[in-house]
Each structure stands twice: as C-alpha cells, then as structure tokens.
Image (cartoon, rainbow, N blue to C red; front, side, top):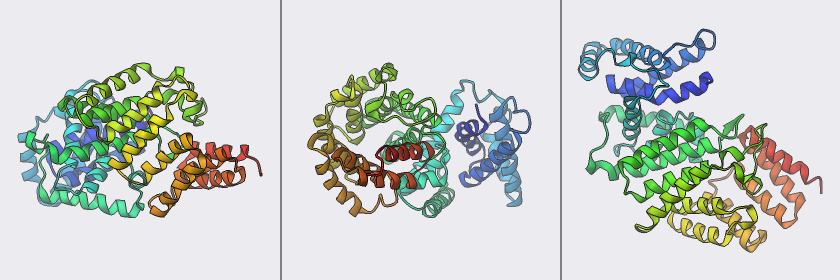
Length: 411
C-alpha cells in the first residue's frame, strides 16, 4: 500500500486512540497531523516501521505531551491517561490486523464529531476531516462552499468540542436521535468522495468507499431496525457494485450506459437489494432508501436499453419532494431527458442555474452538454463539454470530457 493511502487509512484509528488516552480533540488532532507529516517525510526515505499505527500514535503522543507540558498541564493529563489506558496499549497489534478496539475508536470518533453541541454543518465537516481523512478543499467541494469558508467551520468545530468537553464515548440510547442524521450524511459524503473523487489523478478512491461501507455496516449492526441506516448501506452496496466497470485499464471513466455489466459485483447487488426490500416493507421510505431504489433499478437492467427510466423518474419525483435541491434536480433532469426528451430536460436546468449553488461546478455543464448532444446540437454540446472540463479538478473526468468534446468536431 502506498504511504499516502496507508496514512489516510490509519488517521482515524490514530486520532481515536490519542483522543481516548488524552482527551482534548483539537490538540490531539494537531498532534496527529504533525505525526502524519513526519511519516510522509520519513517513511518513503527509510524503511517503513513494522507497526505503522503504533509509530504514529507514539509520535503524536510525544507531540501532544510536549504541547501539554508547555501549557503547564502535564501532570493532569498524564494522570488522566494512566487511569484511562494501560501504557502498553499502543504497542498492541499492527494496523493491518483485525483489532476490534481500533474499530471501536473510529466509531467513537464518528459519534464524537456528530455531537448535537455542534451545528449540523460543523458535525459533517469535522467528521469528514477526522474520520474520512478528506482535505478541507474536498469537504468544501462536497458542501458547495469556498475552501476558506470550510476551513473556518472546521476550526470553529474543533474549538466547540474543546470548550464543551464532549466525552469520547458511544452515545446512550436516548442520544441517538440527535446524532444519527449527521452520522448518515457524513458517511454518505465520504462514500461519494470515494466513488467519484473531486480532484486528483484517479476517478475512484477505494479506501474511502470501503471505509464508508464498513462504518455504515457498523452503524447498521447497532441499529438494525432503522430504515434509513439500512437504506444508506443498500445504496452504497448497489452503487459500489459497479466499481470494476467504471474505468478502463488506463483510468478513463466509462459512463453507466456503456459499462460492461458482467463486471458488476452481483453479490453486492444481491445484498443491497435484499436490504432494500426488507426495509421498504416496514414503513415510509426516506431519502437514502429512495436513492437506493434508483440504484437498484439501474442494477436490475441487463443492458442500458432495458433500464426502466419511467420508474427512475418517478423515484426522482419522490426524492425531490423529500430533499429538494439543485443536485437532485440535476439528476432528475437526466431521467426527464430519457423519458420526455432532451429539450424538456434542458428546460429544467434553468432552475438549477438560477439557484446558484452549482455555479462554477462542472456537473451542470456536463449534464447540459449531454442533453444538447442528445438533442443534436453538437456545437453547443461541445462548448459545454469544454467548459465542464475546465471546471473539474478530477484528471480522469477532464480527459473524458475533453474526449467527448473532440468527438463532436467543430460543427
């Protein structure tokens, strides 16, 4: 595993262990970031340590101890640490071994960051940073806000955790309702960033999708009767099942309609469909269940031509009533184009553009280009493909969009 990927995987485990031992989330996160930087510099030039997790925790603990000493708090925190965790805990299993304590720490960290003392946007932002390992720029893109704005939100969230003294533990039964919505949204955004990265050389970041699925499965095990938890897990499984077919060998993206469906993971589709069927039988569907149903309709089609677009459009109508917003309308426009023709879909994009929240985002231009191409207006389609290519931070998507534009020629 590449050093960068290993560090991303270990970040929530290390942060969770340090917070559990010392407390003070904000100081612990700073110390962990320093340890990650040291590892990024040292590990490629030297032999990687036999136990990377223990190495990172040890270095972060030293950094944090130095900081606490400078704040004249060493005795208080060392006494607290001795009472909380045996001193040999950090030298236990290697990071790649099955270790329930590590997994519990990550889940505790998830719920710490989703405490109701934080605003909903702060909950999601700080969890994406601490548990998902996303950069501030990636989180800003997910929220459709400037990077500087998101940086301020994350800083305020860390300060709020420090001031309120939120305990590092799983919530009690009566606390679930105040945390669950933010937890699910966080996991959804982590999965989305992994499934289609907002920037970088790769279309997909499997480490993020795998971690999002693992954490969602853990939450589902805690709350097996919650329909939206099951719906989110089903959505992830049904969507991630297409992973192997989404790119060519050179990383070029393959649109859903052109994917080799024999490469889809049928076991994941069966598990996701089973979860969805079970949860839909027990009450009114929520947004994640509806999105899972849309994914299931796509996965059930033997080929693109067999896709039940009227059913998908009906599901998007439901989703738009449940969670109205420009992204849902943009996706619904594609379904409208397949059912009622591209011109009807293009009319819908006016409301998305007027909303303003997708301004400067490549997907609006990409969808408009696709619909214009369907309508036979190749000149306008080419211009919007080129505009979308300029806006995306994903290198594979940029190459794909530029290729689409070039295929349309100059007319």
